[in-house]
Amino acid sequence: MKKDNDIITPFIKDPIKWYNDIIFKAELIIYGPTKGTMYFRPYSFKIWDLIIKNLTEEFNKEGIEEVKFPLIFPKSLLDKEKNHIEGFAPEVLVITQIGNKKLNDFNVIRPTSEMLFSDYFKKTIKTYTQLPIKLNQWVNVVRWENNTRPFLRNSEFYWQEGHTVHNNEKEARKFAFIIHNIYQKFLKDSLLLPVISGEKSANERFAGAINSYTQETILKDGQALQSATSHYLGDNFAKSINFKIQNEKNDFFYPFQTSWGTSTRLIGGIIMTHSDDNGLVLPSKIAPFQIVIIKITDKKNDNDLNSFIKKLYLKLRNKFRVKIDDSNQSFGYRIKNWEIKGVPIIFEIGKKEISNKKIILKLRTENKKREIKLVDLDNKNIFNFLKLNDKNILEKALLNFENKKIWIKNLDELKKNIDDKRVCYCYWFEDSNLEDKIKKETGATIRLLYHEKNQSLAINNKEKTTQVAVFARSY
Image 1 (tube, one colour):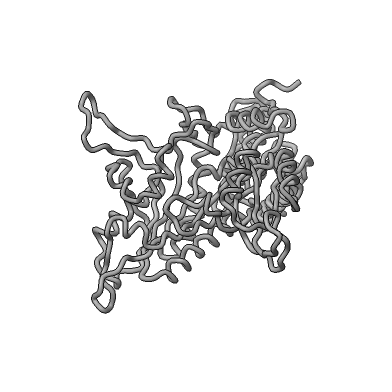
Image 2 (image 1 turned 90 degrees about the vertical axis):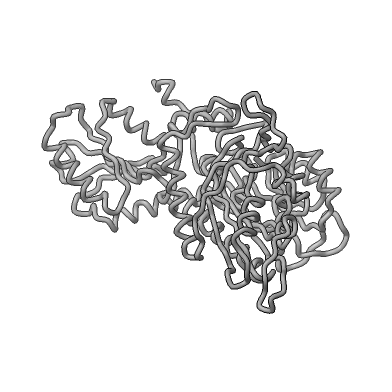
């Protein structure tokens, strides 16, 4: 009989309890002292650290430099861009008093940093020859949320936000797409997330942006998750603070900006896309440990076995992230613990295995165990096993996505399929009022717009278009 701490509530029975079981039993977080906050435990922060490492490698290729900007800044600075502050006002934490002293000039805790970066750019850029400037920071932000859920929607979360300045619109737009494509590749290749790429509608566009481009992930429960966005800001933010620089003719002009980001909600997306009723399932590129070695013995002083495992560990650690679990817990507990934590490969090794010159290998995505000869345990074969595990993860995620996707031909079909937790595709002419009406009636929004090669009749217009809207409920 399974112990209670081994049991994950089946997803089909209670998706919310299933999700919570995984994040707590995999030791990812515990709740923080304030609503919507959480303590990141070492295991989850290792996942986030690997996400940082992988994305930073891609950013470096584009000449993006790292900075760190203030957490607190004057509310008057945030207020300068009208559309921007209107979009964020309900979520902004405002500091009005310090101790017993009420402030005349209020400050805000960073909800995002467009105005901070614009202020920095204004103070440091004087001429077109300094451009382009490409900066990024990995920081925490605070946006007060009424309905919170760990990783997916928090009042405080971690993210990266990038900001660039360019001499002209063409260059800025091009860079927004470069970042858009970096995100798409990272989400697909490193996180194994099926994504839909496109542009936000006017209703869903980032506050203050001219265009917002998004990567949307479809989760096990049929809801969408905005996984990463890239925004073309035009010269809106430069104008809001009168940020001008000189061109080659010594005339002054407002430069063009982009901003882009992703966050720790990616971890929630990974859980809600890949995990199963046995716990977390992690892609190899962001698994804190790709291999865990578990001894089939309760004896601490088994020198021959200990020596063999130590040599194997030293052999593997140069190419893989490896851990030896020689804790005092029972063998069964250790196996279950690392299964819940989503480790791609578990090695089981005891005296019998050494004698037979074999080890037992178990992939997280398979129910079977394999006997592997020691002579075959080279880096190439281990890489192939990791690739196989990743392949299994991706295939399952793609199948879920295809099962949730449906093309609809009218608004009645849209409403019915949203209630059935489907992701609805339809040909569409932009109509902000109808979009608002659909959101009010169904809870679904347009997650993105994109264009097909061929035209078809729009569900909200008798004319043909290539534009497609993807409707879904979202986190």
